[in-house]
Length: 216
Image 1 (cartoon, rainbow, N blue to C red):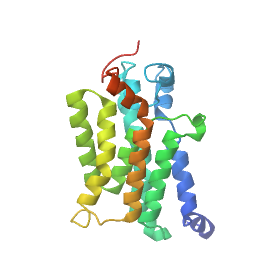
Image 2: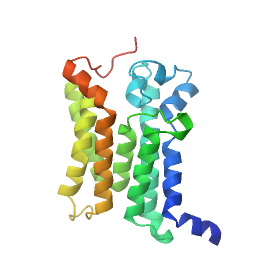
Image 3: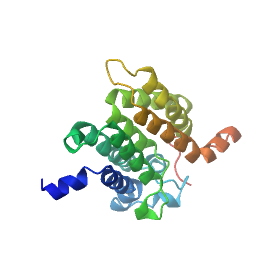
């Protein structure tokens, strides 16, 4: 790699900006347009995310959206944790990049800063930190969503439990506790709850849409 490019990549701000731009790719909109479906921002909850794409009745589109949204959160974190040492980047840079990708999904510069709620991207970030951590949170989400049939309720509880899982299992055989990573998980959890505030009101009112419900 040319030395000038290496110098650029060694700057934490560079990876944060790149992670944000990657996170700004709203795959719910991109996949739906590519597959000839309605814009997910025009029906259901109007949220550009996998759950709302599922309301279109196209499961393949929903799965692709979920996968790509997760990958864009995983790439910057896993990339830095695995290769960042060669560029002087450590766990703090990985945490910042993960949060930047998550914020990109919430407030995408390519889509007028109108993004999704960040569940899949947050899961990707967790997988980047540790596949075991991501798996634990994914199982939590699946268990709650499968039983109650509310994606929002599952996301809320998973968001709160993610930093708890991380702290409880830290300094064990799987990962060492890092303050920057823990802080990033807490901030993501707070933002996830904030982005689901309307869902909370609907859950309390008994009007929240259940998983599998099609658009009207």
